[in-house]
Length: 351
Image (cartoon, rainbow, N blue to C red; front, side, top):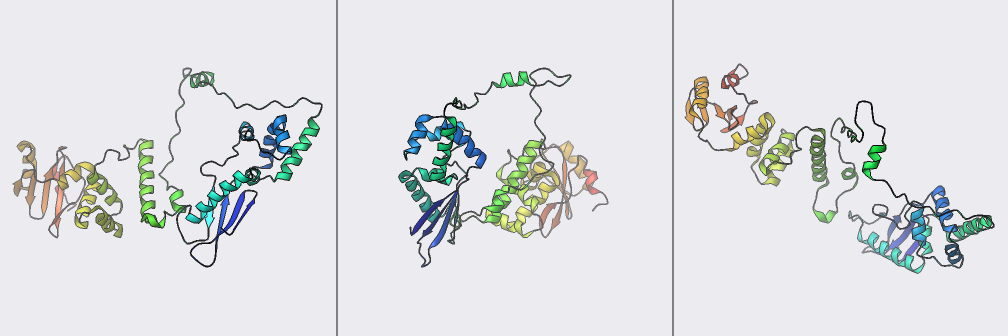
């Protein structure tokens, strides 16, 4: 560490790394506004012992409680500390920023007033404001210490609420409907994952966007968000979203399945969901002969379990009682349209 400077809301430091030129590190926390500082000083000035200690150059630990009584937190919480470093490391925070944060903690131990400075007030400004308040308070009643609200029981809050006409007292309000469509999580568009993690930011955006879509479906009542899907079902679902794009081949590679197989699964999922995927994946199975006879009558050809084949067209009877049409392309059987309870509907002029 070559240099460290604390100023209102900010710490600047020069850190010598592996390169000749030192790295510039900045650590920021939110400084209190003028109105927030007035609230803090009102509380602190009402405590004679605190004021005496501060004017004597000491910062009693109880000041933290005083700031809390004013509705604020003197010590920065999670998410309040923002770091920036000129080094090429993508980690947040990088090792240089982390080192500065540790040294800032040491600096606060040596001079607790530096914490007040980070929150926006220099030592001389703070003491001057306290002296003014003490002078104005001489001969008058000190303001009472503010207390945090104790809150009320949920039952009492609902009972006290205004009850709309025609409804009973204590009725839980209907939660607001979710947005009209799924969004994209903003954080993954701003923060790149650490370089050492091996995670590509595009993959992270894809997964986060997919999770947001599934959460929206669950919240809007449009299904269960895919929470009960198996690995193969979820893979087919994700494949259906990228059909016809290079992302499908990449997804297949990452999942360890042939791209042609995933394409077949994705098409099946797009046309008929879990039922179609099961028929596309399963080997021929024995089914009710009476039900199978409908397919034989409609298409003719040979029979193998639940499959009726004639030339390059095949009808498959699913366990859900629906018929699925598959067409042969380059020796692969691919689902060609949504299912139907009547096999004859699958043999119309749409061929």
